[in-house]
Length: 426
Image (cartoon, rainbow, N blue to C red):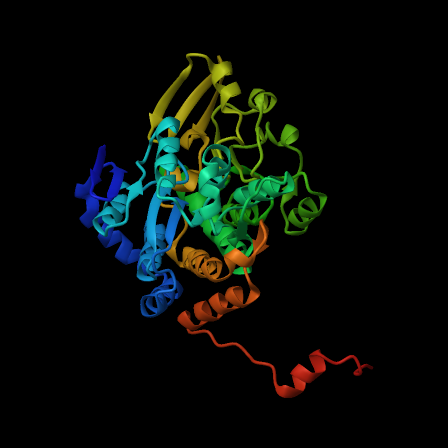
C-alpha cells in the first residue's frame, strides 16, 4: 500500500509501479468503447467541464478509467474512490494516478479504509458527484453538510443507488438534483441485462471452475440484472429457478420459461444461488438450514446484504475455511457445508473484471453526458431524482449503432404525419 501526497495530488493506491500494466488494459478496453471515445474527442474540443471539480465513486476498472479520462479531456478536475472494497483493479488505479488523476482505492480494503477513502475524496469539495450506490451522496448529507451548497448535482449508476436517492428525497433531505443514469434505456436494458448476465457467470466460473450444465441455479430477483443472469445460466445448460416478490415479474419469468417459486421452497433444490434484488437477507438463516451439502451462494447486487452473512457466521462458528480465492466454506453440520463466494460482495467484480467494455461504453457515455448536462442545467433544477434526458439516451443509441455499422429506417414525411394525426382510421 502507498499513501502519498505530492503537491496538490494526493492518492492512496496499492502500488504505483503497476501503472504500465494498467495503461495497456485501459487502452484495450477503449477499443470496445467507441461511443465514449467520440464523446471524449468532443469534450477535448469543447472543454465543457473546464475547472469543474468532480468526485467519481465507482468500481475502479478499465472502463471507469476511460470515463475518468473523458472527464479530464473535458477539463474536469476529478478525484476517484472505490464504490466497493473488492472491485478495484490496482493496476488501473496506478495508471490513473500516473495520468494526474488522484485515486483512493485498494482492492481488498477493509470497511474503515473504504469510508476513509470516500471522506478523503470529499475533501476535493466536489461540484459534481458521480455515484455508484449512493454512498457519497449519503455521506455528504450526514457528515459534510458544509459542502452541500457547492454541489451542483450528482449522477447515479445503480438501481440500489437510485432507490436510496429517492428515499432521501422522499424524506425531504436531498439537497441537489440527481440524474438516475441507471434508468436510461441505453443503460439498464444493456448494462444490467447483458453486462450483469455475462459478468456474473464469469465471476462465478473464475472463482469456482464448476460446470454449470446440469446444475439447478436459483436466481433471486427478476429485474433487468436477474433476467440477464437467468438467461445466461440457461444458455450454459443449467436448470433455472426464479424467486420474486413482484407478481408481474414473477409472471414474466414464468412466461419466459423459468420455474418460479419461493426461496423457502427453492432453498432445498438449488446447487447454486445468485442474488440480484438490491434487498437485505434474501437468503436467510432458515434457508441455510434447508440447503444441500455443497450448495454455493453468490451475490450480484450492489451491497453484501442480500445473503445473511452474520447468521451464516453464527451458525458455522469456527467451522469455516477458505478453499481457494473468493471461495469460503461454512460447516453447518456433520453432513452440511455451504459455500459463499466473494464475501457476498458483487461476484462479477470481486472475482472477475466486471461488465464487458462494450456495454459500459453506453453506461459511461450516459455518465459523461449527464455530467455535462448538470454543469449546464443543474443550478436551475430543484432537488430531486431526474431521468436522463431522452435526447441524450437516443444520441447514445444512435452512436452505438453507427459504431456497430448498423443502419435503421427513418420515418417518411407521410409516416410522420400519420403518427401525429387523429383523423386516419379504418
